[in-house]
Length: 255
Image (cartoon, rainbow, N blue to C red; front, side):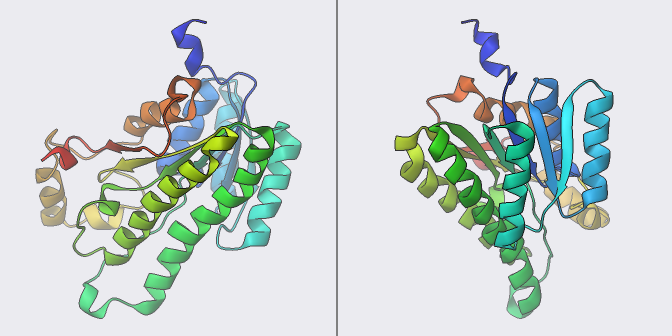
């Protein structure tokens, strides 16, 4: 087999949760360009439909599904629709996430609960529901979106950092539990990326400059920067890779 063929997703079905915008949208479009049939699942169903339509107009295969990742029934329905559309689920990308900055000493309990519900509980519910399908298939690749904040301190974002630390451990635990069934589970750990999620943070020039100063490559990431790493972990090229947290961070964690 050609080594390049390992990156071909022809005949494979993928779900991208949180694919209506940002990193998830970029990954969904990358998978479609690599010939995957993609289901874009998001709470923002209009955004998901727009992204799916853009994939179709570019010659790919995609459809949109609305999902509330914090509700088990909604996640189960997403999986049922995806199976009906795709026939099988070879790839799951978990990209849904929210954040809210604030000092830890008086961080709002409601904000904490919402962030944990989406970023950690929601991610686990999606892994659990799709994992059952992949275990039955005895094959599949799950790629979770963690963060450098899940492995190093992230002052001002205590809930987000805690949720992403949880994502790291969920990823490692599922990788070991599901390896005997041929299911791989890995995560990406990006640094700060320019997306809708970070626009409010970047609005303060001093904060933005402080973020850039931490990154050896001298810039924040952009959505296209995440696609190659995501496709690698999802593809057959990473057949011997599981339980890995791949930093896409411009060298931040190497310091």
